[in-house]
Image (spheres, rainbow, N blue to C red):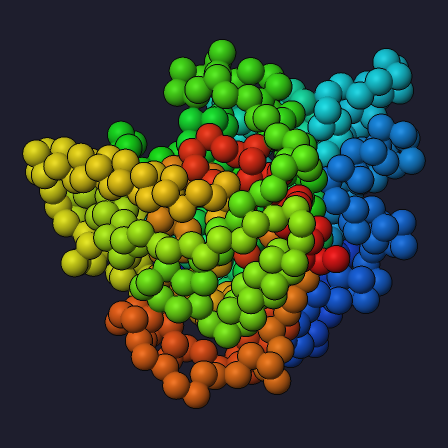
Length: 547
């Protein structure tokens, strides 16, 4: 099956179709012909396309070496003058163009602007003999909803008609730019932004590990791009799993920080709906890059410019001199993870249990079905009317996952009094859950980020393993275990008793061959504002698991 047949986007009326056609033509024209892959390859690609950028012949050996680096490695190379900022962004831009042709991950390609920005940074380094800031020359890819000043790009809130150029950078982008970051691409996101899949009027984004699987959402364009090394650092947003799920599905590292600790970055079509709060955070290819990016931003004291932020700098504790108590949650009592994830969790339990650095605790989940019901209702307390109106205004047809996410029974049009009651219910649940957590006597929790290694297209219908922590506002990070799906090991269970209708649906999707090549990630969670503890635990747990 060709890439084009796999990446069809949303449909709509004649006006919508005209607008979309213009946007897609514009994007196609932004990518130089020298970066184009052969039509024969795109007409019949392999299931796993990770090796294609290297084998394409489009990048030089030096450019391949640059794009193999993580963000910290890139910064070291530029600061030591081994690489120039111009050649770094050019290398990642070329690889991003290749990634897009294979997965439909981009919405805007403005490499020319990135090169101009990089040249100014190279000149600064030459004249001043020091970097302009801690992110000097670092190429950063950004999600379409994030606002940025650019002649080449606009912003979308998840619908086609809301596409407009911006006169100001968002606070986050302004800080990153001042620190020396270079911007060169924007990435795809789903209709409404509220899918753990990425399909929009720009197309459906594919998972480069297995094109039959989704790279997740809503930051799925970022995850596909990063997995193909068309970026070494991306910025996503997470209100229900939109950083953690895409990173988990594509073997990456990502963190959803506690809310109100990172600067605002994006537009939202439900302004004022604060039943849950989204956070911006990094998506990348190494654990060390997570803390590096967050620390660089927080060292600027962004709370002095953004009244919505709390002055809580990132502090990563030294846990080397004490025993880390790690709770392991095999399942949440609602949906049982697929066999590959259970294999990874059992390996973690075995390796962590054998380590003198860790005490393993069997974690008992607390009313996750109730918590998931609360946050699903909080997402659209207008009954989904705003979403339906946005689609109607743009002449855009509703996608199946949009219909699912805004439909009853969770989604209700609440009165003011009913909304207050729901918010009170949320707060009581948070109090009860924290008491339960404390009674378990754990520092962090290890669990899946989703009940599958990645969803098959149009099937991401259970967010409980990420959205629960959004409800509680607990920071969470995902990391690759180093394992991949093995159909010979990860067999369909011989007996199965469904925990819930969602569990029965998830189980029905599992066929080992359908998930071939997919990486297996796990998630680490800690209570609110323990972001530094999450990063410290990630470093320790990952080393033990991969030893």
